[in-house]
Length: 264
Length: 214
Image (cartoon, rainbow over all chains, first blue to last red; front, side, top):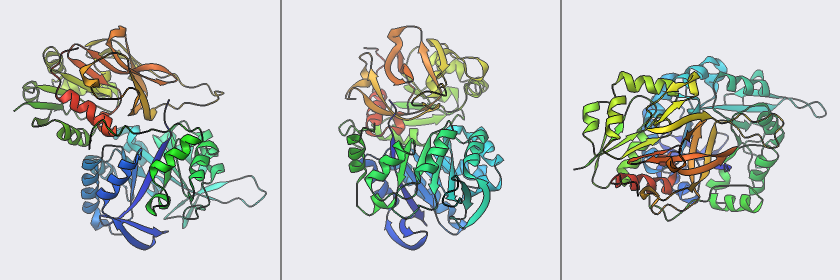
């Protein structure tokens, strides 16, 4: 039986892991290789790196970081942030990323997703869906796609957009609730459920985790295949191992790493 | 110095596989190449691959690697991974049906799409970590715990004709062949290079395997 995945997310700025609230107050949180090794040892099933480096001149730094991390850990690695062209996708895959996450560029030009997945395979193309609830209380729920860190509305319906992205060749969706991101109040499980019911590809839940219970809810209420979290792990509040123990106790199938097979 | 050849025919990214082999291969050299002569001179061969089977077979033929693989498979340890394992069989039903290398009798077939009203809709591709049961003893399983978790990404799976060619099984919508073996050939549907420590152990076992099937 397929395990539900637990995925720590790391923000990368100029070759370092950083912590901050909504892209502000960035603080250094360590060397990407060391942080990646720590989560790998704790039993992370995958890692997601989001490059938030402001300047595109720093792209080579990102490639070096991806290469260093991919040489040190042997679990799947997804890299996103600033992916605009097939050349960007190729450069990240060559550096050692297993999957590439496309966000704003998909909104600007949906066919980019098709081009990338035709060339490199659907299995390595993740589309990031940043959605915000736009319906008022009492109305049927409706979410829209936002870009630029949640600042720019696009008018696109999030559920229709998700289905379109899968039709265009997305192999997986990374669904972030912009309302919940950074709030520690739990995923928007209604949003997740609406998308997981609508698409045939795996969905990663993101945005809003404050407790281990939230992870479990994203899987059970939201129907997600994987749960992504950042601050709950970075702050030391919980290890990935604790998250998996919690999920196991609540009847979720997760991978338990075999510690003895080979020392990395 | 012994050499492990990784067949680079443009089907996917070989960075992780190369790094993982370097980690486990002892003092062997890792040769990543599309040159049949350079590859046939290696002591062990790895045929990786992600993508579609038609493109894979076309590229193997275009680079004159298909005959090299068949020839190499007669005398040295050969490992197929993911799509590289699927092309070891007779034929794949992907891309409308494509004849493959025919080193292991059987077909490669698609997972059935789940009925809309299924209680839990199992998605295709089968993507993520799943357990592998070791269905028969083999040198590559040494030190790998039974029912270990491995990382999979695929929509099609091997269906060998002979049960003795199934080396390990996994379960997703049904029980399927997650690993195959015949004589000095082994194949994994999952990605050992992405399967953390157990994956490295398995790759290390292959890297030191002499090709004897017991």
